[in-house]
Image (cartoon, rainbow, N blue to C red; front, side, top):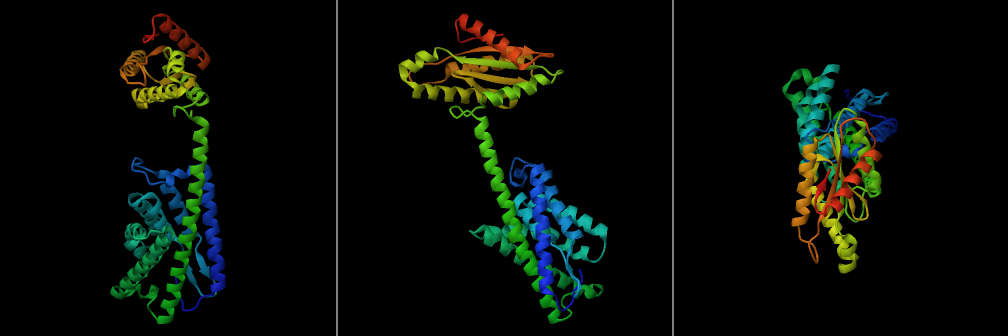
Length: 370
């Protein structure tokens, strides 16, 4: 970074806008290859390399395509603004990883500019998060964070210049006019960049949430909250496509459900379906996928599971339903289990599970057949 007392503000502003357009375009393109949910701060997500990569790429592009006033020799980039946004969106730990990667790249390029960048890099993110938390308005908070961190950036540069003579050639404190020029450029660029890029990221996140909401509505049965027929058969197709992996499915039917509806009403019947859906979901956990096959029938897909394990799970969920409390009277289910260890298709497996369910019904209901 070079400093001089005067700056062509018109040329500088145009380059800043071009720079922001490039970064915004990169964010938009990135969202087409990676889900923008990578920007969500999630305690369950221990690693978020897609999000880290996004901000590292943005910082790298900013560094290799700096903003420069050609007439006056002022050169700077927006790495600071991007590091702040990384910590605000990803959290401080992942933001620190971004700083580390960008610092390594900066040291690889060389030059004295790497010194104060690394010196303050690991302070910028945590300070930004702390400042944003002090404001009710996010927009005000991110703008304040940009200004506070820019002040820290200039202070570190000034301190290094004061204590180390060899840093003097880069110091903005050589003259008051020089300091005013550089301070204005840094505050203006970082403030505007954080304000605009944060709005762009939030807009893309909002679009991603709306898209996910619509996609979930297309995949979910509204009465039970389980996968609908289309989605559960899609999971089944993927399970049986793995020729070297076993797969099992359970067809589950609520016993005498029509009689229950006629006696207690359809609203009570809906409560039964939802309660049974919850019980099945808890019994299956992360072992497979649960869907509503239609009416009072449910289907469970258990990929890569041994037959005896599928039998144990079937008995557990059947017993859990029998022990549960329902409006009016107890409710039971019959379960048909089908299993495959080689090449087959979902239609054949469903037909086999249907036959097993039919045997369970004929056997007296409230039992598992396979």
